[in-house]
Image (cartoon, rainbow over all chains, first blue to last red; front, top):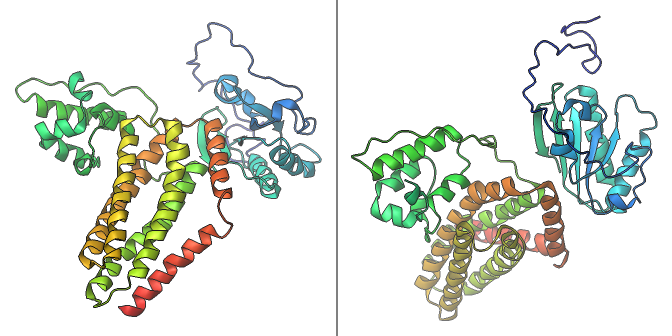
Length: 159
Length: 263
């Protein structure tokens, strides 16, 4: 097993955060889920579903929700969602078409793409941009990149 | 000090002129503002200073206002601050900034245009009226109306900083009326005076918007707000002829060519 070395793919390299991660959060109380829909996987969702109409859409890489401690409160609240893994999912050629349909048919208001810092995750932003460039409507597209420990490394409007 | 944080900047500078110099050192250019109705606390907030710099600025002003009093520096406020450095705008705000580029290009031509008017025995007043058409239709109707009909309605028109911007728009329209009148009676001095007045006003106005107002508005917009603004600006643009942008880009280039040939 690898430690913190630089070998191999950064997306699949083993890294152990047990010793260096301080839990500074407040664990009292129980937070309600902000998820307002099902399904959520990009292959399974239908752009015609009512919760996508004129919505602010969050397109999240699968790992993001496990990384961001307050994913529901900080990112999902008030948004519709679709999730995908640009590294492992099969049949990704339909993803750009689905995003195009979400923009043109569901007339989503904005698209926010959340990815991890690992290089393979950037593919999801590229897919979103491809779908957006094929769409007739133009909408604002934001990219948020998280570190492996859930910190925001960058947050910017990309188009 | 709380009392002074809630006073407008014009009154503070009138009573303590050194305050204007302190603000200048922090790149807060309120000393040249034509209105000066913004409250000191809002000015500090709008400029997105880091908590430490903000505390230092308040400390300096407090020492100025209370010279004999022992003043303690406030602990920096705990709050999120957007990174300093290159300004990154949201797409709808970026659109307004991009529109400023053509307006700034035109403004850069005003000085040689005034020189041409001044040196010509019979100035081309039709060219001046064509420039007025650019100011009225592109800079004012197209760009400023997007701000007045959409953006400022969203931020709130009664905010002091927005009132300052609206005052600038009104002053610009006054200059335009004077330019038209000057061209009508063929009064070179009047045309030159108000073209220059417009140039100075818009130069300051655009700088305030690009560097202070727009980033401040952007910091307050939610993702959903950004999408809605983008749609509303798009609807405004769609209501204009398809060649609107190109027509005025071509016009500014033509004016530039005319001025280059006559230099």
